[in-house]
Amino acid sequence: MGSAQAADTAKGKEIVNANCAGCHGVGVMGAPKIGDNADWSKRVAQGFGALVDNAVNGKGNMPAKGGNPALSAGDIENAVAFLLEDAKVKLSDKQNTKPTVAKAAEAKPKKEAAAAPNAEANAQPTAAANAAGAAKKKPVNTFNRLMKSRAEWNPPPFEDGIHDPENEDVYALQQPKEAFASMPSNAFGNHVDWVKALENGDINPRFDRMDPNKKPFVMDLNIVREVKGSMPNVVYPHKQHTEWLDCSNCHPAIFIPKKGANQISMASILMGEKCGVCHGKVAFPVSECRRCHSQKK
Ligand code: HEC
Ligand code: HEC
Ligand code: HEC
Ligand code: HEC
Image (cartoon, rainbow, N blue to C red; front, side, top):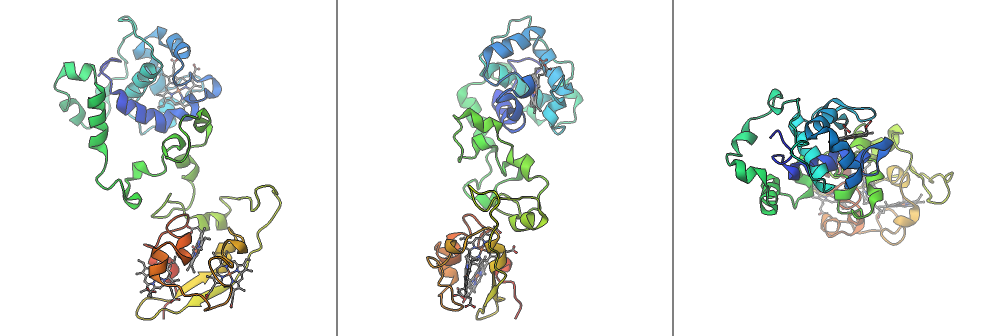
């Protein structure tokens, strides 16, 4: 470490996406834009080391470490090296200076240094080496969205597989991690308890896309479905559903509006029918038995 060439730009990319792109994507408050060769060429005149130091300590409207104190100086070094590489900025020998905020000064596991015994291999990371590094970090059960590690919850919009990463407006969107930080939490999905969030007034969603003043017609009617055996009974609450949904979202396509008129079983829910039309897809999943089976016998 200690120079632009020795930095791990694959790691840098992850750090930038998670911490820096919110401002550097569109150039908030004059931040040099990601991928903008002219912007970054100007900045690098002072040397790589000075850029890293300024990013670590903050400069003008640039908060120290991009506002995330959990990042180490080494993380920032990797991030800045990525920003320069990504903008195709070539460093002269004179510009390739060392940051004064020494990486070693930070309390960080020494494993990284030990894992790079070959200076030559480290100097020019190949695409294959980067890919191997990325693959190594993937936890085993990535296919199971309930088992993602905390760091992988709520990825930024350009990485979530939903938004189009080619559209530069995704960089202007608020980061979900930031938006969700103050909301009541849950153990699944995007880890927000949306029912509580609505109850607390943390969110104030429009009921109608076109009409900002339209209010939902909330019906406070619980339907208790008795369950044979030892499982507690199911309480289906109209209140919490009609705060979000229109009657026509369920009646009559999914449920006939008459108590006991519908055959509902766990099998059908698991197959994506009845309550399973939403639960496990856009509402809490079947694993949360007690949220539905909430009435003791
Ligand atoms: C809140 C917005 C914001 C965030 C988040 C942010 N930056 Fe910046 N950054 C700025 C602004 C604004 C500037 C321009 C500062 C100036 O020149 O006065 C800047 C400038 C920089 C510079 C150039 C410094 C110089 O000496 O010219 C670097 C390098 C940099 N940022 C790196 C990062 C990295 C790495 C991250 C993520 C860890 C990050 N920034 C996150 C707003 C941000
Ligand atoms: C999320 C789905 C959902 C939504 C939205 C919903 N309902 Fe229902 N509704 C149900 C279920 C489930 C039952 C129980 C059916 C059963 O027991 O077989 C039910 C039962 C009913 C019943 C029968 C009550 C009884 O005692 O027989 C009425 C009336 C009714 N709903 C009206 C409404 C109205 C009016 C709205 C909108 C304000 C609405 N529902 C919204 C799912 C929904
Ligand atoms: C989204 C709400 C919901 C969740 C979550 C849920 N259930 Fe159910 N469960 C129901 C409904 C509705 C019925 C049908 C009750 C009836 O007979 O009318 C049911 C029925 C059952 C029955 C009776 C037999 C059958 O298959 O219909 C058992 C046993 C059961 N659930 C176990 C569980 C267990 C264990 C979990 C957690 C792994 C769970 N349920 C999670 C809604 C839910
Ligand atoms: C049309 C979609 C839809 C259907 C069908 C549906 N739900 Fe829901 N349900 C939601 C949404 C959305 C929420 C709120 C978000 C969340 O909690 O994930 C919710 C929340 C709930 C809650 C939580 C209330 C609280 O206080 O936390 C319960 C319990 C529940 N549903 C049970 C059921 C049962 C039982 C059925 C089937 C009889 C059912 N739901 C069918 C969409 C649906």
